[in-house]
Figure: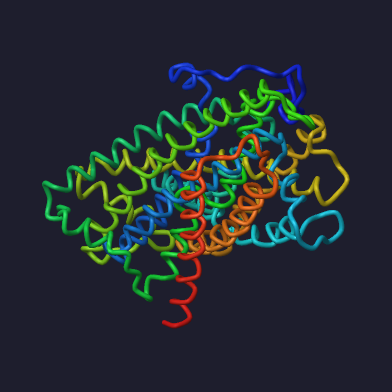
Length: 455
């Protein structure tokens, strides 16, 4: 977190014209791909393959829909950050509804739901510890777990995670290529995938027995509710709002041009990131459905990484296990870095809204981020050591993410119809897509709960 300029303070001094050429816009991308480092983690590696292993191909549509439909809600949050300069919880604190103390109901609800999210990221800490134990068996998982937690704290508490994340993104790319190659190599094995298999996963059926894991997968794959909330901080710290400048009471044509220009850059950023993580998600699911389901193997408990590695060893050979472990380590560890960086901002902002400290003050914010960067990972580690069930922990976290997504959806609707400046009103095509996204999120959530009760 740079102290050279405060990205949370928007003034006329920070104004910059948006790029108009595609090549120039590419230079300002980043927030969406930073988010991807978090997205391509436990959801894809654990929940997606677990759903594929349990259900076969029939639930492929769940993870694809999860990735594709949530991005419009992310776009609405991104727009709000750019034209208002508000942080996520500063915006939440202006939502309609009851208040307790200084905080809006949405902030308090989020704080309660995040208890389950601690389980999910605790499973990621445990996953990294298990991988390290497989690589270095002499050191027990119970020793590796706090080591992993402390190492993440060291990288994040002063903002040093950024260069590490850039390296991780490159390695995630390599891991993604490995996964896609593995899918293609399936065609030369007994686990070959046919178009009929793919078609069976696009029938929009959801057997009641798979509702719980499907709901967890829907909540955790693609952009989750908490990741949509994090997106605002990355946009603000990238300078999108600062470059747009303050709107004022009567925005002039120059402000409108800048706002639309930077929003267009944000659209490109989010959509390209969506394409990347959707491809990865589909690849993981197909591997789980084709290889693990066919053998009755379901990733569970401390054997989860060992089971997942069979997706690679049975398509690329026994020697691929080491490559898988290295790749899985990078994916999960980069997720920890991204998650901790985002969580420290989210919790700092939430505490600022319900108390009296100023999140926009650089010194106060940096101090709070540093404190949380030590506390949060240790809680993650403690939860993993207590439960020792990564699959269950990730599933519960996914359900919590789905609930958070409903709050995020409510906020997005409020932003679109109550806060959006008239000069930034989108096209009817955007609104149609927005409502298709909103109704799909509501529909899948309600249907899943109804099926669980009825079944």
